[in-house]
Image (cartoon, rainbow, N blue to C red; front, side):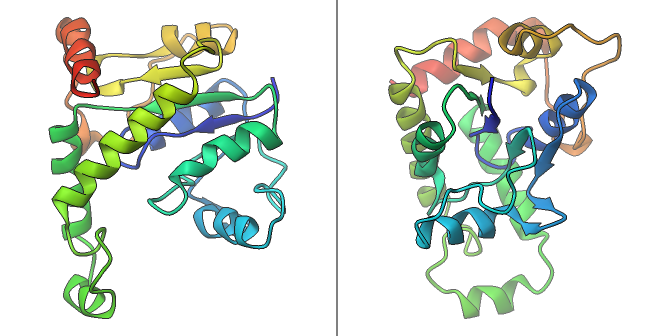
Length: 206
């Protein structure tokens, strides 16, 4: 195994997964590393035609690195860093929309930022654009890895996915601690509905 890339959208449990990977012994970076914001660094590397991880190669796992302009770069990461593993963090779209809306709404001085970036769907709470992003990204990832099930894990923390799925995928030993839940305000899990929730989420993508 080369690298581990989280390719889920934000507000899908990326912080919890970063902590879980650290518990498993992987050096993980989530959004911000000592080198700076990895979202910006990866995008700049792409614009300069440099390897996407230029300057941040030392980590084992990368999470919350993508945004609407860079979601597609998972394909280039796969090409540049062969034998890597990819984790698509997910949750039901409506729950994801509510969580993202709550998150963006709490940004300080949001009105000023919206005036500065009037066409930015993130800051302007463009729910329809968010829905398109969700559906397009999930479809693209699933389609790309459709013949490579060993390289992609679809992980729904909110449906009850936990150590078993992660450790089987990465072929590592399961730790004797609870799976971390880092953003407790987003905790909407019901393990008893795990199978039905995952089926519903899958059917929405068809």
